[in-house]
Image (cartoon, rainbow, N blue to C red):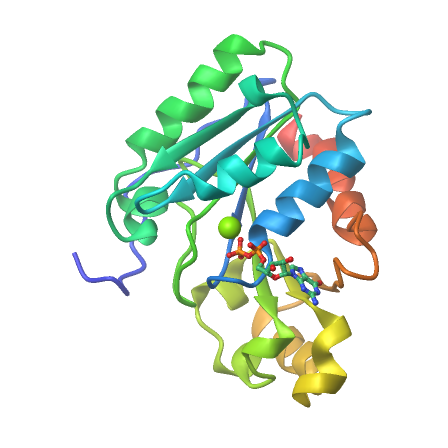
Length: 219
Ligand SMILES: Nc1nc2c(ncn2[C@@H]2O[C@H](COP(=O)(O)OP(=O)(O)O)[C@@H](O)[C@H]2O)c(=O)[nH]1
Ligand SMILES: [Mg+2]
């Protein structure tokens, strides 16, 4: 299968009251692990949470989250994909599904399972069989022309986060241009500007998650 095909071999299953499965994808270094940590810290008092991380060869992202103690260790599982991260979140999602189901079995009242993808290119999207909703994270240092270039992640994710706005003045990125270009390719779906340096709790993204959890279509 080609890396850029957009056929999803898995269909979305109904939630039947189980935890919301939220995918977080985007390029390497854009802030996916930092956002995952922020959401855990902000939401852990009000929601029953767990996390699955994906790395190609290591368990570095899970190790980071454990070190930071964003959740107890038994709520954080690492999947070692051993292949292109894209494959593990879309084509052969079995290792990720096993990890999610194991967490759900261990913690039967979970409200939310965050699945962080390994860093990938702009075409990576989660299978609907793995994630009920997905966030795509870009950062301003990757270039302000990235939203204009589109790609499945930018265009189709349920929420696009443009992170590291604190770095915009240093790298000469035009935030308004990025927002405008993103809005054009996203057909009205939301875009959120974020700086985890300046607002470490990711309040806007946390609010979006709360809204999604309340949505009747997912009840
Ligand atoms: N300046 C700045 N750095 C950030 C921000 N968010 C994340 N970072 C840093 O960017 C680097 C990569 O973040 P990480 O979450 O590991 O990226 P990932 O590869 O997408 O998971 C880390 O050193 C983070 O501390 C932000 O909003 N501003
Ligand atoms: Mg990461």
